[in-house]
Length: 347
Ligand SMILES: [Zn+2]
Image (cartoon, rainbow, N blue to C red):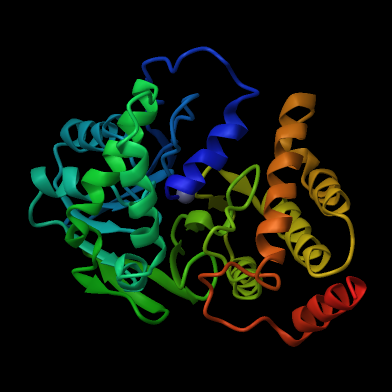
């Protein structure tokens, strides 16, 4: 997630607390299965999110999937490696959003031989005119403001620091297609889903533990549409569903069962259809809240925050015919029909 995303996410956290950001204490790692551990990101009011981390114990060392944004998150990963007395030999980034990859540099500083496995989608994001390059211009302007709250300034500085050294976000081993791959001596089903949350999202299925680690293909309570191609995203969800997973680890939120995942998946497609129809934004967001109610919970303020965020995304996606401006893929035939119907309705 980038600076704009952070600002959206911050609004999601308002329901949690209006007080200044407390000093975060990362949750202790949880063992999901033998040799598979989970460090859940901590949502800290006033700060941007970190993506979840999953760590596989592989024959050659640890394989870390996603490295978070803040030092407190990457510190938790490093502490895990110290406690296990094992080196980190590989970092897999599910996608280039910086809440999943900013920690690469801190991990590599301690384990310089760790190799980064990810897609090359980062290259377009940092190229002139790319999503992160544009965010950098905005962040530099924000950083120049004198009256920023300290936490906001710190968040911007983290972003600026990462953007000064984007080489640390690039793959040592570029992932371009799906297939079985040995990483750190352990076999994984590696999937590359093109034109989904970003230009190319990487997700893993571990047939031994039946755990799928899918990055931001699922984020509870709301999808992050900033760079999204909704049609490819739907296909990516279907591809996840087609594996024999028992547990999905989303990019944000707690581990999910097959039923949880399907609840989210079944809410996603109708939301996109709604975005591409002439329905009111409120109708689309209400449908999302209803469809994913079991994941969001009953807290009224939280449900309203989710609805507000989804309202925002309806207008965000409608600005560019039902997909993010940064999505290169064309909208599906079905999607085009919907978009056309919507345009006609404004005639
Ligand atoms: Zn994320």
